Image 1 (cartoon, rainbow, N blue to C red):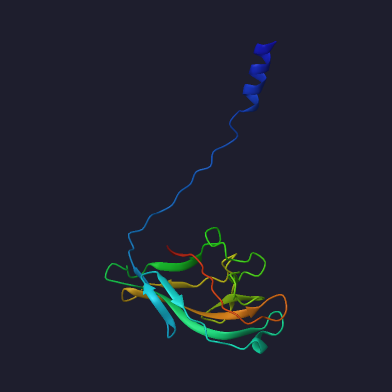
Image 2 (image 1 turned 90 degrees about the vertical axis):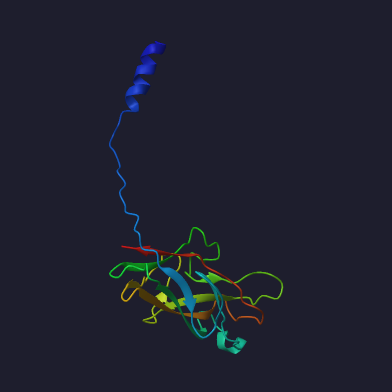
Length: 178
């Protein structure tokens, strides 16, 4: 009887199919930098975008936006292959600050932090970027060994009127090449 049960369990675990994964690792080795009038601490792909000081009256109601600040992510260098298609991908699994509901970046909760405010991104076309779903994405083709992704950062009021205080958040990103 025990032998018959072992045979039944064995047949229940039969192969149903196979999943094959394919991909390509490319030799594109662009240097990644950030830029813009308010960019500081530019250390390769790590940089800080300084948002302007805004009044709480500019963020008095949920959904209000203020402090539009342009910045860019630039690819360059002699080994940045012309014709390569690149895209910026924001990493929600590695960026615990991304609010899954709004797609914006949550503000820090330390003492002295502003309340009811997040940081949102817009792409070059001024379309809202949902950092959680990564849409809409920008694509750039490397030409003359360079490509650039233009963005805007801005404060976004959430949950009512924003209180005075500091704003500090971050996001992890990757550059994907086709």
